[in-house]
Length: 72
Image (spheres, rainbow, N blue to C red):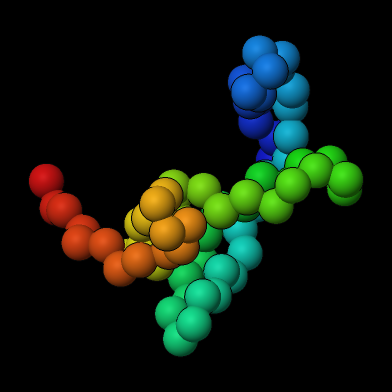
């Protein structure tokens, strides 16, 4: 879809391609925005996708759990 500028955790800035893709976890699927990083970089599941799938991170048990969605 294009490119966007990002601030990385180490403080550096970069421009990366982004687009859309299907994300599926279990029986749930959603079209989400994805950012295409370096081939040797980690795969990350972002907040946008987690919310789309109604999931949250349980940092203690290190797993994904169902989330209650809030509508403002």
